[in-house]
Image 1 (cartoon, rainbow, N blue to C red):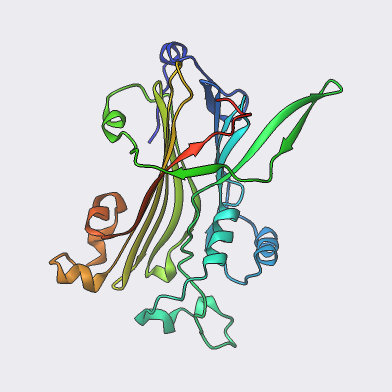
Image 2 (spheres, rainbow, N blue to C red):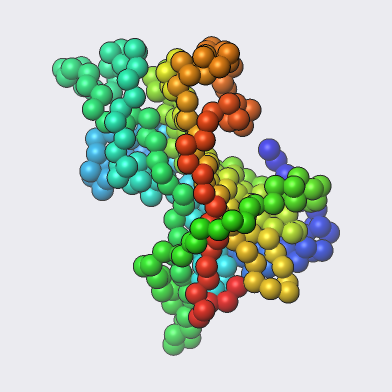
Length: 292
């Protein structure tokens, strides 16, 4: 999806595109930037394996790709990257999904070894994004960046992301989709982690999605939506909605749905068929010493 930005619309919204090779824009105190790079090479993959203490990584890891949203005045920084997502996969350590085709997956081991899938080869992650407080400080005439080690504080709330407002027709000032990692499960499905961002004059909205389909066995969808509405009269409200869905092909068949994997190519279309196993909405609580 390519979005042509109208200079007049940018100006009316009080936004400006980032300069140079940077892809993104500044709007209402936020700097939003996406980076899309090639997959990691073999030496980088080896380094990642050592750091993550694993000998398994997805087929395609876009290690330098990222999406970053930073509020300049407060230093609030929300960003998305493959390493932190895979660290979440490693920490969660789900048991491997049993599949009939597992015995054929010899590409997972050296020829001299027996194929034993004793790890979560789907790379399912509970990752909802990375965050920190990053404040630029002027020191001796130069800019020094200090990064807070503590995470942002999210509180459970009853508020909901205004989906109706998102459906309103207004200019899209910036849009991008960044793939963080992908694996085709030896042609037996798909495991994909990506993040999409959309910036309009009234707000920014993003969707971090982990999508898993193990053909004939299981489908899993883990969505994290984050929304920030711009309001000049008060601090903006940043809401985060997490929704996990999951179902076996057997359970879907019992409800009368097709079992052919061809019918499940688009997670957005079939998400409503998958039962919700976890859902919560949280609001970002901004510390008193920080101002949005």
